[in-house]
Every structure is written in C-alpha cells, then in structure tokens.
Length: 96
Image 1 (cartoon, rainbow, N blue to C red):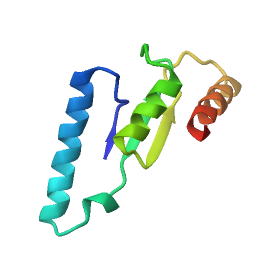
Image 2: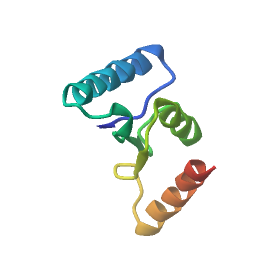
Image 3: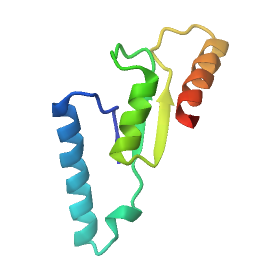
Image 4: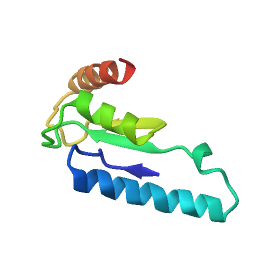
C-alpha cells in the first residue's frame, strides 16, 4: 500500500485507518497474514504541508509503515545537489 503522508488531522488519520482495514480484510480473505504485508508511505518535500518532515515520519511510523519514500520533485530545486541535500536532511529524520 502506498499513500500520501498522514496528517495530524483526525479525518486523514481515520481515512488511513479505513484504507488499512480494507487491505487487511482483503489479506484475510485471501488467507494471508495482514501483519506480514508491508506499507509504503511517501513524503513529498516542498508540498506545502504544514507538518515538518519529523512529524510526517512519526505519523507514518505510528501508522505502521514498513517503507518510506521521500519525493523531492516539484520542491523548487534547480540542481541535483539541492535534491541530495534535501534527501540527506530528510533521511536524518527517518534514521532518528
């Protein structure tokens, strides 16, 4: 399952919970262990989100994400080095 970052709003979190419940029900129907399924979250840097990278990482962790993608496209960077600096900074939030 891949999705956009969960926000701190209840509506978004409840939407993620509903989506996760649908995926888990489908896994059970297919006689698969839903806890064995991974979930990939995605953070888009420069998306105008009011949440910090650290808050978004924490929200995905709480949601049970097993993988996290960090998108720097459309973040206003004009060089490869700017993308690398942003990814390096964001990865520090993931690793902490």
